[in-house]
Amino acid sequence: MVKATLSLALIIGMTLGMTTAEASQYLRLGAVWEDSRSATFRDSNCEPADRAALFGCVDGDDGQPIGARGDFGSGVGAHLGWGMHFGEMWRTELELAYQPGLDFEGNANFLDSGEEQPVDGSLTQYRAGLNLYLDLAAALGRDASTFEPYVGAGASVVRNRIGTMRYEFPGLENQPAQTMVPGGSSNHLGWMVTAGTGIELSPRNVLDLGISWHDHGRVETPAGEIDIIRGGESVALVEVESTRSRLETVGITLSWRHYLR
Image (tube, rainbow, N blue to C red; front, top):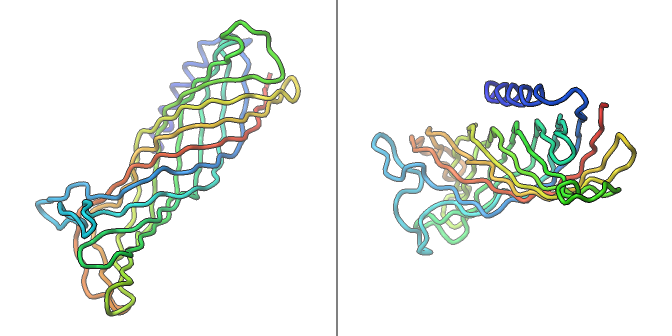
């Protein structure tokens, strides 16, 4: 993650270095509310050679492949950006973001385990991205005004860290009946598209309001020992294959852009 962040910083630094000395630089500080799309945890390999699969290559009692279906909910995160304009139409930006609030909640469909099989696990995310924005008024030859609509896109390096995932089976005997799957961290490439508007507060201060769609790559639990608990006691430790789910969100961003010169 550190190497990837430094690489992105070097790329944007070289890019900004090629601009003219008169280019406008800015800092951006803001918050983003993200709402996740539906997500499903499945085995990375449902037929591993050297360990068991958590779900396997079979269907559950509901006719769907066994897995954990749900979503990562919604939450508020923070981001910090440093950017520069290329003339009147374009600006580029290095963004760092922290999102602690997207926690998975869902339901599994293991065989002969009842209809209700709640699953949960907490997620923390860090990302470093490079964004490019187009000022629509300048692109259409319009004069600048209080409102500065824009569209943009970006790529990022994402670190998704999920905690221990808890699978509960309230329909079984010997309660509490649970299976604890170890959490872990994984790094992925992500991307986003956005549209919004800047609202000029003063010559050096702009309020940004935007909506965005994000693909944050995968969330993964590593291969390792799961703890099978029945009647409140651990009855078995079993080595299983890793599991994974994609993470996609829609976000609403509110931020303050301050120009340095």
